[in-house]
Length: 97
Image 1 (tube, rainbow, N blue to C red):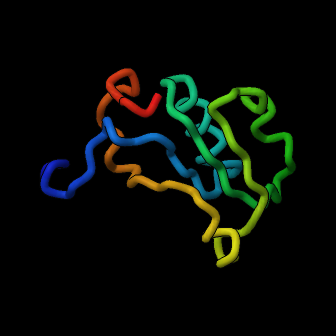
Image 2 (image 1 turned 180 degrees about the horizontal axis):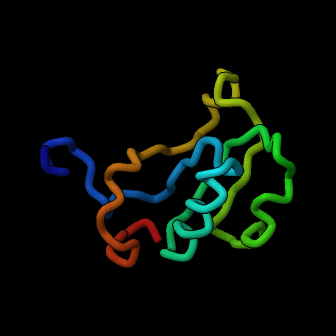
């Protein structure tokens, strides 16, 4: 199915939400997304320590939220979410940056 048929366009992505962003996969994915110019919000319990993303912690495009995705109150925070599958164009084509 094309991006247009799904109603999601990569140029519309303002933020990428990475749940478990300080875990095994997220700790590699988050810096790569930031390098490409995406704005990234991470939700994680930080069970492996709060220093996992220290290399990028001062990046202005990174927001770290310590919490559990099962916490309904946390998930009702105003966090715009787009599907990760829509990441097919470089961020320089995005109007959100």
